Image (tube, rainbow, N blue to C red; front, side):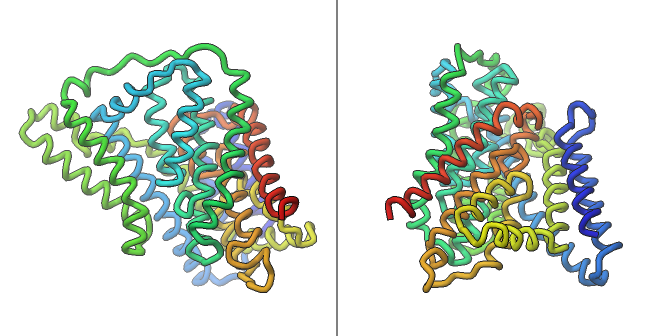
Length: 431
């Protein structure tokens, strides 16, 4: 059974990677491997149907949270964009030099990701890039660096990435210590690719022609109001979670509901034509539905591997082959998270290793937990589908998997290893 599931996953993964040569949308491949892995598990596995059904429902509940979060966030951003709200920001970013703009966008992403989260930040920044850069392949380069910066920014914040949230809630890390302990390695993992690219990028960017359509039917006051409201609601999501202890997707759905109601009231006295063009119902048609299905398929497939015990066996294998060396284990988990979703890998690690105050590395805020947060958060940048931010970028910008592999993966890997080496220096050489 395990072999068949792994073969299906690998073949599906290759179909995703070869999307353009095969001319098969990656969402179709993802949905197929999602369903087929569970089908093999239930037909060839040892577990009874009832137990597998419970596992599937559990996986669906976890996956649905991510999908609703993503869908609501994309819709909020699309509402702001349709009302030309991002023009207020893009008008203030006057840099046209490619290197200068790259640094501005990267640092903006890095710090926004720590406050929002890497997925939401990626969606917002990609919307800005569409207003700033006309050439698609140039935009791919910037979007790829946004993925690296968003993952790096999320790794040092307790609310910046799903895995850091898991470790924070689980008690393995504390908010203050993860920030002070991981911000430098995370910054290094972004700076290394930035510096390298700064030597290769030349010339000026070409901005796309500004659309007068939205500008002509929304006033500057409306644009500013929706920008502030949209960003404010996105920032409110982690606050809402802290106050209510409800999952993040609930806060995002609350934000979407508020945005929807405000826009309805804002345009109620306008002509029917304008109301229709700016209505949320009409805006929803432009939200990238294939990206949602791609997420669904990938998370469902990974959930099947987790339910079948393959991810736990992988974690145990890592422990055995490394002789328990925490630096090698965490580094390998980071590399694996570029292939397999980092959430189940971290969940398996949290079950395998317990908080042990008597062992410094495994105590609260121990080296193992800090490095796990860093590696799981930034390692996903090595491949475009290795993180939620990467999957969103791939879907929204239609980034080719092979293109990313050839041009960006090595940069992300070098940055990732440089950051991991910083943690090693901090805890070994400087101890």
